Image 1 (tube, rainbow, N blue to C red):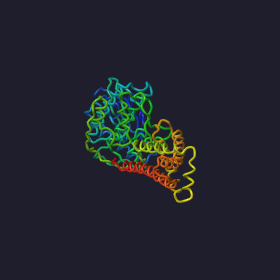
Image 2: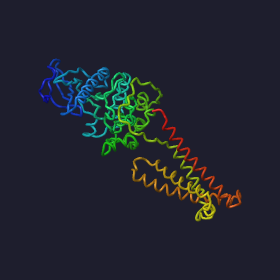
Image 3: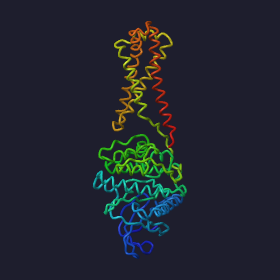
Image 4: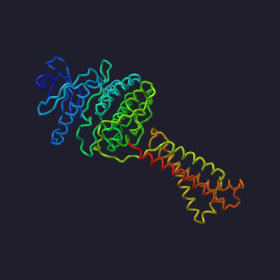
Length: 436
């Protein structure tokens, strides 16, 4: 295979001038069309030495698919135009519009984050382009700062449809292989649901987050840590996003059905009241990427309920201070002690779960410490509540006998613990079975 250099002519008319950039699939050249006397960009496919025939065929198919998908969208001003595809040295070369500018990724690295107003303009352009692609049945699947071009005339364009999927495309991804940039990949794709238009919107959210904050929300030191962050962690709250905070936060929702549609997102950017309109996607959903176990989502109302119940248990424990002995002496010699121990341990676990209310930004170590402290506090509170509730019932002349008061105290505490546990289980069960 011939290594191409500046000055070489491709297809008898395109003279390579300078390399503009390189990526995993090849290089992009600035070139001159000597027939039309205009400058163009040319994407050269790169084949790794020793690549198998299957991988070779896969890359050729991806290049052809990129051109085909982009050609469907060539009339949209927010998408880089594909002019032609030709074969040279048994490899396809994509001839496309030359953009005088730099990628969003290069801008962030070389100059810094965008202003909120500039980022809002970028968001509108990308949303319009993504919407046009989805209407044509094309899902990009690799939206990231490196594939967003900022032209010198102020335009924003979406490029690189190399792994895009159309509703008529055949599957090119081998089972178990993740295609795309991990830190911008939607969590449902990591779990095996590929080709959803909503996945592009998650990637857009991660891109816009980096555009205004200057850092990628899910990038970690290793690939596995990055994948885990996409699946399990919430993005840190944006600090510089201003009026784009709501949009970015909603786009990064782990649930694809909870993300705004393109029309809703545009309304949010423009400060309008979004109208919920769901259009059935034309794209066939593929299940060809590797499937990772889905985390159990949680909702804040569950933990608010637990917090209220734990506050009541703590209040019941106050009258039991400083000595919880009298009631425990009555229950520890019969079967009621099993119920009492269960209530104490369950209260500890429920209180430990309140650490989920802490923001992700505090870190795992602080969360673990909070869980440990919560467990200890919950056990302590429930232990004193066993006697405190009994003492309160006697003081109010509701129950005179200490033995009956102990039984009533355990019954009330057990009901409170079971209600909290049942609400938590039911909430998680509903979330686990929500349509994705």
